[in-house]
Length: 465
Image 1: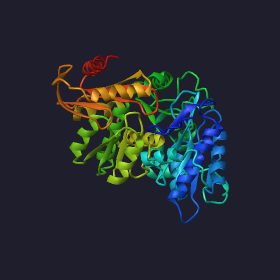
Image 2: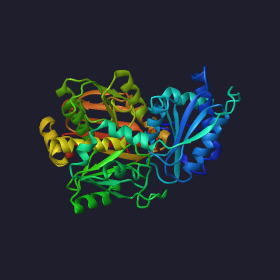
Image 3: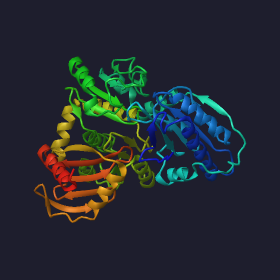
Image 4: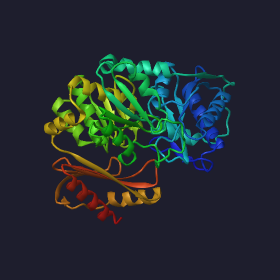
């Protein structure tokens, strides 16, 4: 059994590679690593889980293994979003967290995410050390520790309330449709927003680990047909969808039209910079939007670009004192909260933007386009085995590129994560293997849909796929 963490945890098919034995193996290796880091006292961690099949039982097995290895454990009593577990980690002064979740993967999968004491995604060095300790034949050096059950829901929601002027949103008379996608965020937005003039309507909130009607609980446009219809038919203010563990968000405007994750990143950057008037670095992954660069340039703040994976964004946010971090897949973190994605907080901040501006989301999108120009984005996923995808990208890195691609003048080529081609007008094309799935991904952003299509077609032609 080969357990290898990707850009955001380890995921595998339940009862194939993801078994109680493998969960206990990871938990024991994590305990060994914690004992290496924490030598003057007993380490302590928070263990959480999502709503997937047997996640609660896997979490209990992980907690018992950690405790037997001398690590004090705070075990969540109920399924909770991953950011709630990150919040509890910081609030309790724990040394890290282990979360049983496979995020947006299909229902046959489960997985494990590891968190640092800051509540951030574990950096590559930490997970590589855990991998190295799998199966290590040595004692932990600690006596058995207790497992204490906790419910951090109220504290987490209080933290969200303190991050935004919630009374202003509650009194605004908004109608919000929340698609829980059968995941761990179910029930939480209504707890935050209902009770005054604003109302939340929740869909797909049942606990169903089969995620009916979905390939997986991922808040991308192909999965949001019902949300789009409910928003448009009901005249709602906004529609938001959360992935399986609640750290990512998808957005539908008041017309029932999907808003790309890149445009949401731009809107959140504009809100933080121009409404909250916060200044400081912004961190984005190599797949992040050029819109953020344009907005940051207007505000006179730097942009730091990292390889894909929120662990790298979180590291950079902490090192740079960043005010905002984001990625193409719909995960956004805020410097005044946690160096970790939080879908519920992102939703609240978008609502605050609507209330403070007095405008619908479509109008805010139009204003942003008027300020920085039109931008369009698309990603294509090509099924390829990881070793094949890596070989293809390595061949591309060694290739010579023409001066013009799809008719666009090439400004430069970078290999921070895969191969990124940057063009003189700010457009870009990225080719990289997925860190969590057997896919080769092609990303493109340009000033028109036709240019995006042309770049993606040129990339596929060059790769021969």
